Length: 523
Image (tube, rainbow, N blue to C red):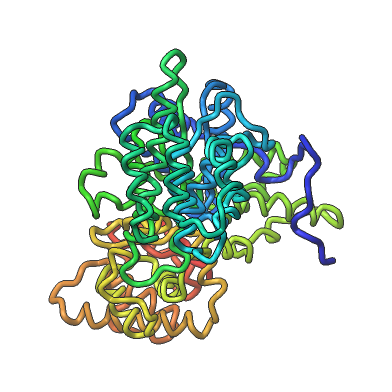
């Protein structure tokens, strides 16, 4: 039966469905409390990063609730880049202004900050990019509500202005009317705005926003009010990335943070921030935390709370989910759906889920996705194998961008120095949604690559031999088993080789390990 996925929930509705409960992330909460209690300036940027569905947004919401309870006098504002319309600096900053001025119900906050300099700079920018509009039309810009200082002081001027008056003269009149609400420096800087190009004004918007908010923070001397600015789904800024835009896309964010050390910045995304590669000074500012999998104990507790109590089902879900909350959400929903007709069984829960793939691959471009599909076939890879696969399958990814691809949170270091591996849930979903013929071709290509490397080395490392055999078996089982060196020395290198059923590919040694089998592969 086809059912809608999104329906409006009832207010304060409680449900035991997955994803509605918060798993206590003590270390991350402690890091936030520590950052919040640290005097500012200097700058402080707290970063939580991890694969899609790992629980970053849930953590952000929990921190916001705790902040509101413990600091009712403070201000928290979230900007979520999941909305495409908010990814440009002008729209993003206007949204932050509105968020600081109004509460969640749209009511104006008591003793809310005012942003006169930013508002005037913003309307100057709008007039520059839309010169065909009458200046009067800007009194109806949503940013300026009836309580806005700019609206209150400029409305009369806008109404009385003739259609023939120059924009420059009119903006100067408005600036003079706002003079009592501006610092001397702001007043001088605003005088120059009409002479700038739109791009130049756009670059200065973060400065005027920060100057207005800083003035408000400094005015709260009697009762200091902590300010937190949260940027969520940060990776969405690069949804339409092009070569050479790695650092230019979020340049305005760095500029905003640099101008406002008085606030605590909280950034949630899939990748570790690399600002220090652009400017080494950022290294001391960034406090970055990788959000990993939920512990098995937490997963069991969560499943029990959701009514999934069958130990065998729990064991299967733990293995399939790799501790990713998104998968657990889907598993509980699946469990409840199946239970309407019959008792759920362990085999009902497989790692490959369309919803998981959608979340994991969101904001990746085609070249990245194709490259990751080929890499997922290999249990481990290094730069040489990466280069080989990119060229052999023409993935359209630059062979010189190896370090750039390794930035993703679902890629981690392997057991052998210089090797990398992929998060198992990501790997299984990529392989499970790839054509079997393609997977076999990649196995064959990888086996050929390791064969050439082993031939070039007089005494290749054990893990290189192991990977050649592994991929030979998965691409062409008879060739792999009859390979002259395939079984040579295998039993002496692995403690369980004598009992392993090689033709069923049940157990394989971990590359770099001297004994024991720790990797399980499907037949």
